[in-house]
Length: 365
Image (cartoon, rainbow, N blue to C red; front, side, top):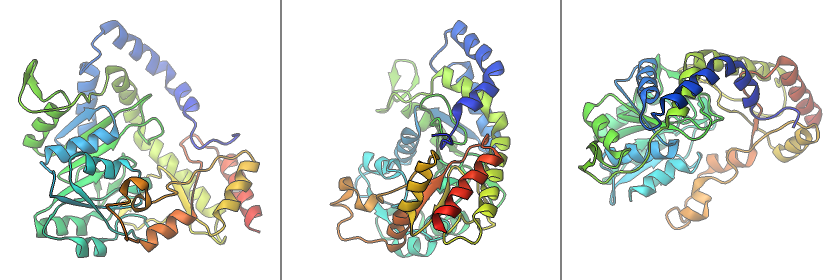
């Protein structure tokens, strides 16, 4: 594609003068597992997010899994979350043996509908798991109130929202525990897989550090059954190089989004919504259009990338057929039928944005 969904090569060339010497230094030091760059990145990320503890791990899915394990969730427990998200959110719930309870989404933000969350809380509910989808923060204040009222854990899925703020606080600093992904295409991405869990709790942090490292606090002494889920040193080097730039990256994503908003105004489609409570960081720029498939074909013909996140909601996935049998979530299903994500990355030029808009305007004429 002439205009790709993401352009990691251009970003790498900008980082190269700083990044390559740092990677070589890490190779020379040969401390590849839980080395000094991992420890430094955890401290720097915690300071940036305003949390007491940031515990890195192998990937974003593990981050969710470790968070649920650290909270002690398991068989017989229910966790309320969204059916309109990547499967990792619900996978992690299944990993610990708990039951996923889906509720529908808000038609503008695509995040959990708080009123439906309130109605779904039952005697087995133990946690709420909102997702800050596409970089749009969930409306956390009423979810916090529900969690406090019912004695529930609040877990943030921040895989797509690094650097986003809601009511002045960073996503990842609000829940009891929060999970991040550093998949390469994320707002803050490494050059492989990587993840992180954040918390203000000393006790949870201690458990999380054991869980990611075979249940061990002292080498070869194992207190609990854990996992091998550690961020490696070279990925930490990449993340340390990018972290000081994350606000700039997110500002540039917002620039791209604002130009799309202007260029697509007046067309028969729904552009992304900002509620004014949280600051959207546009991991994806996702619009809704009844003529989605024709629109995607027109973009492809012009060699412009696009993507559908997500074509099949989780409650309609084969893997959840038994658990979600008979359930219907009309807003989620409508959004899945009409959603289309356009190219967005910090380096996307105004000329490229204008070309995307021109193709869309012509397709919908």
